[in-house]
Structures are given as C-alpha cells and as structure tokens.
Image 1 (spheres, rainbow, N blue to C red):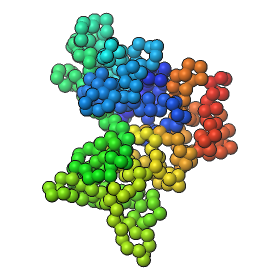
Image 2 (tube, rainbow, N blue to C red; image 1 turned 90 degrees about the horizontal axis):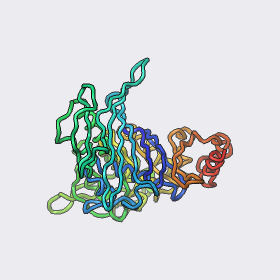
Image 3 (cartoon, rainbow, N blue to C red; image 1 turned 45 degrees about the vertical axis):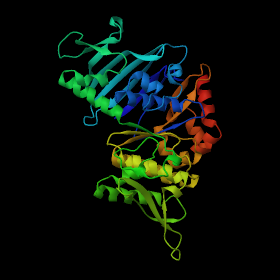
Image 4 (cartoon, rainbow, N blue to C red; image 1 turned 135 degrees about the vertical axis):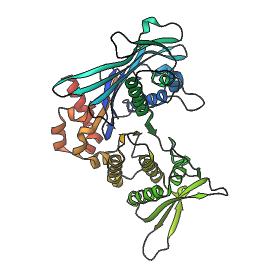
Length: 418
C-alpha cells in the first residue's frame, strides 16, 4: 500500500512529503496546495492505467485535464518535476518499493526524462538490502525513445530496452520479458497506483437511475447501479451496513436502504430509503431524487468504501461537504471502521472545525497541515504533531477552535521564523 508521496516541483510544491496511514487528514487554508497534492495522486493513477503522460495531465476525450494543465504542472521557473512513491508490499511487511518518475514539458507534450524502481528489503540486525529493478539514462535518449536498464541478476548496469517517452515505463513492461522478481515487483507497484481512487461526489449527477456497474464513477453518479449489481448475499450485507450508518444522519427514523432493478429490461437501478417519523405516522419511501445533497455525498463515500478493492487508496476532497456539524462524529466513525474492515487507506481534506473536533487528539499523528512558505510561496506539508507549539495550543482549546482562529497557521509561521 502507498505509504509516502514526495513531490518535487509539482505545481505549487517545491519539495514536500505526505505520509499516508489508514486515515490521513489534510488541513490547511484555501490555496494552500491541498488540491494540487490530490492532483499528483490522480496523475499517478492515470499513467499506471496506461494513459500517456500528456493525456494524464492535459486531458483527452476520456477525462478532463488536471487543474492548470501542462502550463502549470511544473512549478515555475523549474523545467522538470519529480514524484517519488514509497509502496509497502501488502503481503510482506519487510519489503517496500521506491518508485520515481521525472517529467519535463516539451511544447505541447509532457515527456519522461527519468524513471526508476527499487526494492528495499529490511533485514534483522543489518542494513536494508536495496535492489534497483530498473532505471533510465537520459544521456542516451534518441528521438522518442529513452533507454531503460533492467536488473538481470548479474553484475553490470542491466539489460537495455528502449522505451517510449510518452508513457511511464511501468505501463510498458507487459509486452517484454524480464526477470521474474522484476516483473512481479513492477506489477505490484502498478496495481497499487491503479487502485488510487479520487472520489468527488456531485449530488446533481446522482439523482437519476443508473445502469448496473462494476465500479463506482468518480462523481458517484452510478451508486445505485453499483450496489444493485453486487452478488445477492453481498448486496444484502452491504444494504444492512449502509442502513446502519445512514440512519444516524437525519432526525427521521430510517428503517431500510436498498436498491432494485427498474425498467423493462431490468438493467438500470434505483436506490430507495424507507423512513417514518413516529409510531403513529405512515411509512414513507424516498428514492435518490428526493434525498439531500449531504445524504447523497455520504452514500457515495460509503459505497466507495464498500466496493473498492482491498488495499486501495480512497481520496475524498472536502469530505464533510453538505454534512451538518452535529453529524461529523458519524462520518469519522464510518471512515475509521470501514477503512479498517476493508483494508483501505483514506486521504481526506477538511476545513470543518466540527470534523476536527470529532477526530479528537488521538488522531493528531495522522493529520498534516498543507501551507505556504512565507518567503518563497511554495506549498509545503507539516505533520501536525511536529508543530512545536501544539501542546500549548491544545491546552487552550480544541483542534476545531484552533483551526477556526487561524492559530495553527500562526504557529507554523512562528516556527519557521525561529
């Protein structure tokens, strides 16, 4: 699973590292760089799926470009960017992979200028064993190809393959034959990057019928189709879980949440909710078209958590959007419980003081502040627990209060000046 992401000259970042845990919370003021960080994850997911580097940034017919496109993806006045990812082998705790990709812009194209993959194996009472599985050599570039040297088990720089600079090397390796440990390591890293899922629920897209689907869309538009397409036993189990969490949101009593096929051919689906106010009131059935924006966003997050593959990384920006502050604790409880049960890591951003208060002091080690360097203007990331004044600040108020009053940013400024 992805444990660290280092950004060098990526958009507003000069050099910064985000550490990823089961639940990682990113806080920071507007324009601090939180969205730029999430864009880096989206870029990595796209190139791992085989998209060209240019299309992953600028967009194409399949999906829109990353905010700012080619013009703003590299921090000015730099000429190239670098992303480094540390990935834990889900099956072997002692093995991590260090993946590096470097990109430059040439006219209206983004091109690969460097890529490497290194396996790092911890050894008891000894230094870790590092093995470089492949690396590139820009000095030997000829036209559209970049030489890559792959480990063969013998001494020397490895076997040379000329790879296409328009794509990442990970996505080009299936067509060639490599040493088994190299192929397996590259496939593991590629799969982990492919399992990054950026969820941006758009309630207005979710209120209609949706076709049966295997995977949830990024805007959550097909949640009914995804839940309805589950095997019957899993579908019933999921509906019970969804009902349990959803009934904690509104004042009315939700009895049941379920999906069922609709239409002549039964290939579309709708999600329904059965509710009533009191023992004397009649039961009322509401479908997606009558639900609030906050409820729909909550449903999309639950659906993503319950249907993503094991070892995935789920990313949700402004996770509390549309949710009443009094229900923040329900959201946090749901995220923590389902992430643990499903073995899924989650990154969320929030400005909501109620969410920060619901997280509590025990989640401080898993919070990072995205902020701007007061001199250079570059975005940077600081673990909240590394803030020297944090104990003093928390003695005077809750995290939510500190964020609302801007005291966290003030403390970061003071720490930088010292």
